[in-house]
Image (tube, rainbow, N blue to C red):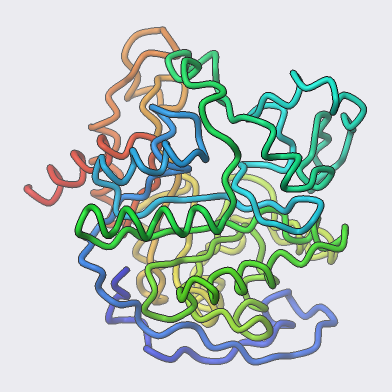
Length: 366
C-alpha cells in the first residue's frame, strides 16, 4: 500500500501515556513503519472482507481464494486463539454461528455464557477447544437468512489457521502472477489478555516464520484497540504497517478498561489523527463514518483511509441505494461504491470483491 508523500518516512515518537490520555502507563517510544512499498496494487485497492463472503462462507480457504480470483488485491482473516494458543480465523471467539459445533453432542457441555467487551454471548468459544478438536468442526454460513445461497456450502471446509491463510496467500500470489496482500485483524486483545492469551506475540511469531515481518511485506495488521497497536511496534517487534479500526458508536475496549472516556468519534478529530499517525499507518472507519472531510484530515495527518464493509444486499445499504423492499435483494451497490471512492479513500473492504473491483475500475476510468 503506497504511503502518501505527506507522511514522513520515519514518524515522530509518541508515548503510551499520550495515546491513552495521560493514563499511568510506562512511556515507550514507537516508530511507525516506513512508507509502504508499491506492490502493484491500483489505488484505491480492494480488500476481500473475510474473503468473498457474499459468495462463500466467510473465513474459509474457498472464500479467500475466490476473492483473489475475483481481483481482490488483499484478503482479510480475523484472528482468535484456541485453548492451546493457536491462532484460527473466525469473526468472533463464539463459533455457534460460523461452525456446526451445535451439531456435535460430544461438545454439548461446553456451551457457556461469556461477556466480551461488554457484550454477553452464549454459545461455544474457541478458547475452550484445542486445535485438534476444532478440526472436527466444519464452517457454515453466518448469515443464512440473508445469504441463503451460501448455505449449500455448509460443511465443506474446516476452520483454517492463520498459518494456513498465509500459505494460501503465497500460493495465490504465485498462481495469479501478482502480489496478494493480507490484513489480519487481532480481535478482542484486552479480553484475551485477561484470559492469559498473548495474541500479539503469536501474530508476530507467525509472520516471522513466514518471512513476512518487514516493512515491505504485503501485510497490514489491524485492531479496534490502541494499546496493542502501539505495543506491537514498541514491544513485540512488528515491522509491517498497521491500521486502527473505528466504529460509528462505542469506544476501544482497552480505553474502556482503563477508564478513559474517549469514544471512537473522539479519535477521528484532526489532533487525534495526528497522534495516531505517530504509530499507525491507516485508519479503518465504518462506511457511515466516511466523509470527504475525514479523508482529507487523515491524509493531512499522513494516514491512509480504508473503510469497511461494502455489502451488496439491500439490508446493508443506505436507503437511497436500495432497490425494492426485499432485504436480501441486491441494491445499487455499484453506485454506492463509486460514491465512496469519490471521497478519496485509499482502499475499500467488501464482501463482493468483483463489485469492488468493477466500481474501482469505473472510478479510475472516469
